[in-house]
Amino acid sequence: MVRAVTFDFWGTLYQNAYAREERLRLLGAALERHGQPRAVDELDAAYARARAVWDEVWRQEQRSISIERWLDELLDHLSARLPDTARSVLGEAIEEVYLAGDAPRPVPGVRDVVPDLSERYGLGLISDTGLAPGRVLRQVMRRDGLLPYFEVLTFSDELGTAKPQPEPFHRTLDVLNVMPGEAAHVGDLPETDLLGARRVGMKAVLFLGVSHREDGRDLADGVFEHYGELRGLLERLR
Image 1: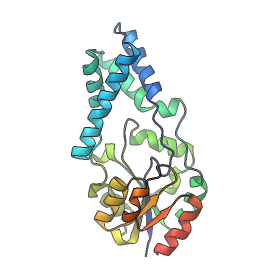
Image 2: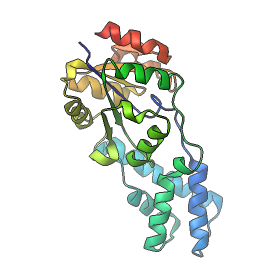
Image 3: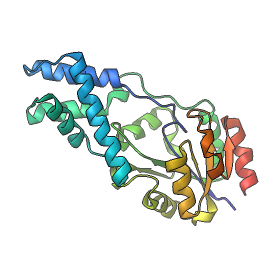
Image 4: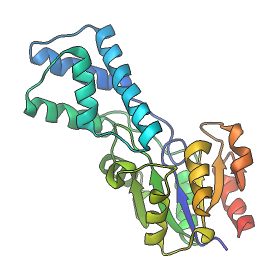
């Protein structure tokens, strides 16, 4: 019997968002203020380098890197240096870009379905984070009125490990006070969401509405494309 449901954030509850151009603008402006202007193609290359490091750490160690490490890689690639205070201000601005500009939006149907599900199930969030840390994503969810419906939010930057490692799932289930067999995890990525859920004994539910990862069907206990389908799917899993 399913008593709890956990969700991924990006590509599942929320539309994917990237904000690369705005973050490059912030970086370029900070360097120019400190007498180290760089061309757009140089900034692009440095950003790509920092992203490659992020991807490598995630693949090999399954954790998120800190904003400090990300800035180290980026500035080293540019052979640039910023004073500590300027680095701190830049890092915070890069992390909070979704609070100052166009924030990611919930997937259609989420704001209708989540309150309904919260009356039937304990709800949790299990999210791998990039440059937007958990403290920012909480504010995004609060803005959209979703935060009160979740009993626990587990972010990789705060826990220190990412999906598909078992720790994020076990930590979330412990707070929800359910056994793995009593919970379903909803996500869009087979290699993180579905594999991680199945490894710990949870039901794995694939959402196709954003990422369209049809290759995950074989790992899924259930598949849906529109949020109006989710309540019925979970009832069948019960």
